[in-house]
Image (cartoon, rainbow, N blue to C red; front, side, top):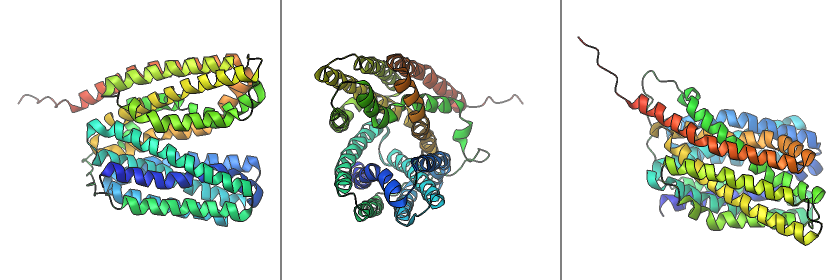
Length: 403
């Protein structure tokens, strides 16, 4: 089996477990463990804060010790982290388990990206990454359906079975990843810093711009459902309809969208267009509160969600290309680990910012968010060109001093 298919199979295995975990974990921690919503939120936030920090050195470990071995070990460690939730009976233990889980997940993402960069030729990386993303969404959908069965049962045993299934899914992913070819570790160059990405200011700016645009993530999972219920006349089942539309669209069209990206110029252009599409989506979402009938509001929401998922797929395709192309070949792990902090930032800050902006301000808040998306998309091009210039200067041979 070719490496992209092996990577996709591993991604499918653990995304099924993750889908079930995401659907059921909050209720398990609240009803079975007895944690308060504030404790759950703080523990998960703490986990992703620590995970975003340790993802960079774990990515560097993949560069220096081998991406395949590191990915296998982190998949095994994630399985242990998930299994540890079975023994959580207090908030301190929950916080420790959450930190372990998020740290392993962030490191595993970086190691997998390094594996992809080492096993797939440069011109196909973004397309293969899109294939993996569509596979992930398919697995999440299947897992969410299985999690729904546990929610319907609403018993301690059903929730525990989901955690066991998630742990087994990561064990299976580790086994699948071990079948990949070995990616030779890169040797550190004399005199260079261990974590060179922390000294790369242009790459940091690119990462932060991407983090701003990733605020669409809590938009889908948290804010839009609340907006539909509190601010529109649309029926409550519209929440499920929009989530299904998003998932199926990524599964069906992400690879096609990614094929439009060939190099940094096209990637910057696609990200700029993604920002404008997201602006349009926000404007249409704002209109959904005006509709006086359920059908009108529902149709407006479907149109807005269609624009949103198109912008999401365009952003992902451009961002993947940029993150790979701007990373040195021998430092893909640590660079991908750093780029992945954008997701952690969106998960940490997005819920607070977006609920305040959209549920508090209404239509003006939607328009302001749209302007933010558009501005970030436009800013990506200059930031990428700055990064390109710094790399061209560093690659330029030093002048020989006269004797």
